[in-house]
Image 1: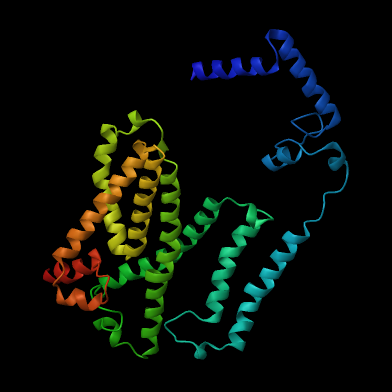
Image 2 (image 1 turned 90 degrees about the vertical axis):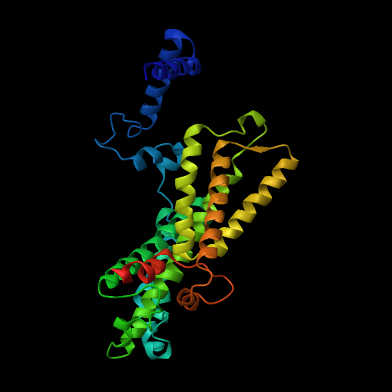
Length: 334
């Protein structure tokens, strides 16, 4: 720590001149700046406890600081518009397009208005021009939205298990669900399942794997000597690959995972032509995904002929969920 402080001090003196002369010149420049802008950088006119935003805006040009700040018409227009249309207009839209016009187990017009409001508002609050936001920040906002939707559905689903809900059966085939009265309650549970397993997973995992791939694309180096993994990384490959196996199987995102894996492999082959090699971080992620693919293949092969799970997961892509296997073959035996 002391060495780091000394290094920073040495850089400061190098930037302002050598020795006491450079420091005196820097202090004189700061004093002159405070006289020009009394409220900036902690000068005499600065208010106690000045915020980061105040410090940020104190660096504007003198002619701009002397005038009135421009009115951000685009920010407040879009913000007001989306408040009236997506929030206040949501119940009005539900009157124009009644709930009875839509399947009760799928989102209605009001639900789509609500989703749009929850996604657009963070972008408007962060910055006036959404196009200036970095792509990873947009992914993170979508990720948080999807994880929040999944949280609600998953929390309710886990409590239903204690009441006898069986994950290896569809919603309508569950004994505690199919006897509900009125029958429209079944549609409500199917809607909850849709939010949890489809909408929530899509908004959660698509930006998550996109960020992982973009991180992976920056893990190349021209030095082949760095193409090795330390012992700690090798030890972490197994738990990392095992976690991604759970993520792929329980989240039912095999297609997204396999496309990401193929994209990573294609990028490795492309960069190899340029004589660029994966560093230790890229190797760790690549080996983790390779182990995940192997575990998924073994999992599917083991349960390939299970008739109950085959009925729950029809179609070409057959990847049973671990919790469905648990309720079918483990908890039912206790």
